[in-house]
Amino acid sequence: MLTRLLLIALVLVVSGLLLRTGWLNLEAGRQYPPQGSFVSVPGGRLHYRERKPTDEGLGTVVLVHGASSAHADLLATLGPELAHYRVIAIDRPGHGWSDRLDGAAMADPGRQAAAIMQAVDRIAPERFVLVAHSLAGALSTRIALDRPERLRGLVLLGAVTQPWPGGVAWYHHLLAWPVIGSAFTWLVGVPAASLLLESGAESVFAPREVTPGYLETAETRLLLRPAALRANSQDIAATHAFVAAQAPRYRELKVPVVAITGDSDAIVSPMIHSAAIARAAPQGRFVLLPGVGHMPHHAAPEIVVEAIDQIVGPRSGLALLSPDLTPSGRVPAR
Image (cartoon, rainbow, N blue to C red):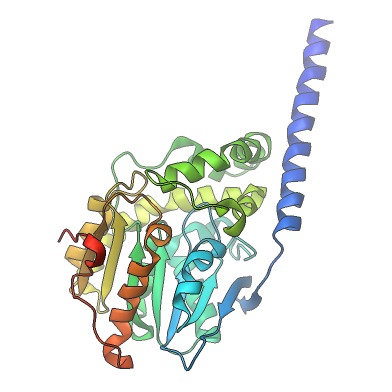
């Protein structure tokens, strides 16, 4: 009798978790339907949103988001600040409303770089400034290495560019596994993530407060769809080995690289990642923001815009800003 009761209890718990995950999946899609356009690439479609310049425009800026997010994170805060540019914000494969394309193989940042460039080549054949946050640092530097003729420059925001001590957390590997990972995602991953959204936001913004309304404007709950959560862990699990192999190539970078980071970033080490690539890149620059965590584009969007303006300035007639990007007491550490 006890065994039967335990079995019934287990079935009820599993059923409840599956129902919870299914509801969160449907609710996220209902709350945040696709607002942009789709572009076809081999294997499926990528979703993006575009904002036209308010005047003749100074050029094109492409925004690529990091882990546990989608295009809306960067677009919500930088889009209004970049009114003089054509702005394109893309959902990486498997995130937001973009298809995963090659399935689990698309976790490789090199494949993501190729897919994103296939989309951008169709959307914006002109040269552009590439802005990448966090985990997107790996694929954006691959784009800069392989397709320098398409870029005017690269702006990195708290970006992953190097291998880091400790590797990847165990649960990302578990979620990435075939079969077992799918079951774990439905039964544990999504329900747990739904309870950790607010504390997760607090950790990436620390030591500053979370931007009011961030979870809504960034459409963060799209991460609570099982396919997106698994894609997120697959991406994280694949990145360490990728940047370890790629890092020696950074001295070959032919475009301006501005690495902007917060001195209090506890997610992606400022010294291991941003400072290192700024030193390695021939045209590298390191900008350290005091009292800022992992979200420099929220804490100091004007600094990100200045970096973009400096990159396009000589070609657009803009007056160059101070070469060390140190307005308002912000200190570079190069």
